Image 1 (cartoon, rainbow, N blue to C red):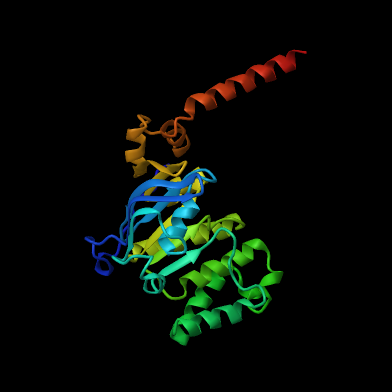
Image 2: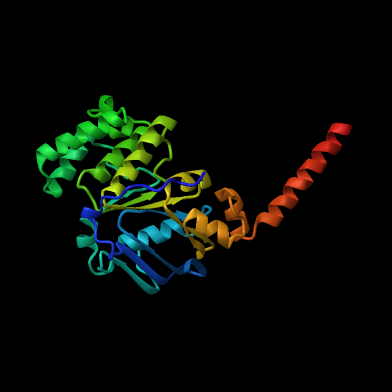
Length: 279
């Protein structure tokens, strides 16, 4: 099922702006082109998906946007600034969630949030209100004073997500953010992202899980071997794939030219299974 249109708070955004623009970006590691001429943009008020298999170049692209890596060629702008020269200013308006929780294991969540609040000079009352809201929503209050090192992966991920939201960033960059979360918590996180976009923020949602991308994202850039295969809404992608009404799995396989090989594998499996059952 395609994602329903959402109501966006137009007073909080300038529709002429693009929070992120990526133009013909290339990044190589030795002989490997991890990102090969990628171009896309992210508008205020949308959840933009980077969809591709593991090793497609999604995480490398995220690190380029964050300024952790520098591209070999092409241009990236975030809030009309360059990550290579304006990394600090850009990060003031970004909340980042990695696939592997990158939080201080020797701290408790309480100490972590106090530390973040201090270095970002956040209003303590605002932080307290947000923490109460998110900890309750994600059913994580009981872990507030426990060492991060003792938490399960899912609970570490919850704390990382909360940490990314504390300063009300304009842009959330989420690299497989639902990894380790149970179904209930994943549903709550999806709703948090929806509300963020409805209030004029943007989300870059990197994932290899087709069903999640189809449910969550307004537009999707399908990446394969570092290249953008196609970018658009589900409806636009279905037209490009000549698969009107199809789900994202069918569209993805068609656009990445894997549909015929997958069908061949499935047919061979069925033949082998039938022949095995006859013995």
